[in-house]
Length: 330
Ligand SMILES: NC(=O)C1=CN([C@@H]2O[C@H](COP(=O)(O)OP(=O)(O)OC[C@H]3O[C@@H](n4cnc5c(N)ncnc54)[C@H](OP(=O)(O)O)[C@@H]3O)[C@@H](O)[C@H]2O)C=CC1
Ligand SMILES: O=C(O)C(=O)[C@@H](O)[C@H](O)[C@H](O)CO
Image (cartoon, rainbow, N blue to C red; front, side, top):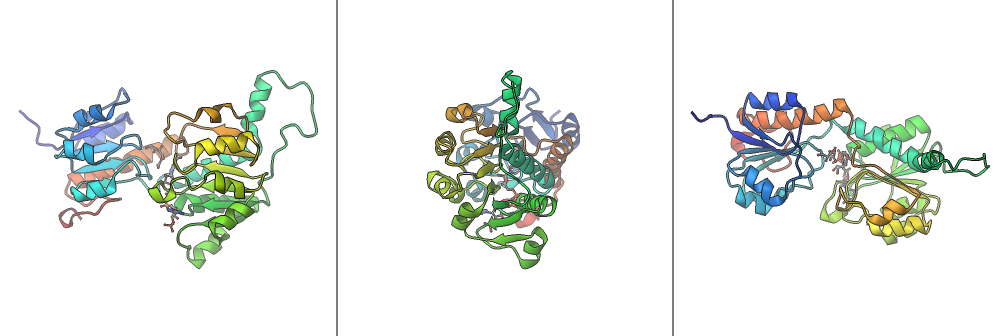
């Protein structure tokens, strides 16, 4: 006897509790082995499914959608959804949802941790120590730059950017400047103790530049060689946004030539591959896209993605849509 429940694919391994909740509403096929699928394998798994639980690793584009005409909803376990071709989804009436808010503070914590590790040369000095190279104290050994009292420049002053601004301004007495395409309202600027500036002024003025802007064609290579050339030679650059926001090849050259002091990167162009030159420069802190990785936050992200699927499956509108929602499902 065939099940009357809608069929969904969970494209990556998730918490068993998430699968158990989904199984109450759907016939679930899941990738608990966490295999890396080619596009053709993803399509083969998605065929005949009405819903998908995705992560940033699964690209949902026109080719996938055309090959899987029964697909009605993709719920991303991520706030960023640049893995969705939103126009192609909207044109075919496929819903997309993301996972905002639940990871904001955790990701802001990590952005600040990466900033501090970068400016204070924490991983570089640890490698030195572990390699048995520490023989004596020296006045300038791993001397970095200060966080407290310095100028923090944030590009992408949304939920996470504001969380980083609050930490910097209220916790470390930083002077916070930011750049977005649109300015925050005055109350929010006052709360974050942040001033709006143009991108060029931000790059010239900031001691530390943190990138938290979503990836889109408009934000591709927000930071390249020309932008790095505007930055102070003592500056640090932190990218927790997305691979492709920074021109990684240009950054590796700039770090090697010490045009800026250091960088902290959680995301990379073409990840999980990392530009080979970044692996050989010492003044960069590299982490494997873990800014939202705490157990409670990953549970909350998985819950929200599942909640979106369940809300759709039970005839309610999706909770956090990123595509137009047809009137019937609102
Ligand atoms: N490393 C990790 O694990 C994580 C990475 N992220 C990344 O962080 C991003 C931001 O998340 P979140 O803060 O919740 O998102 P929000 O949408 O709240 O904030 C994004 C901000 O970026 C600004 N922005 C958008 N496009 C541009 C542009 N072209 N130039 C300048 N500013 C721009 C927006 O303002 P305006 O529209 O006015 O320009 C907005 O203030 C996600 O999209 C994701 O890519 C998020 C979580 C974890
Ligand atoms: O939410 C985002 O946008 C993220 O980048 C991260 O929190 C995820 O770890 C990753 O995308 C997994 O889906």
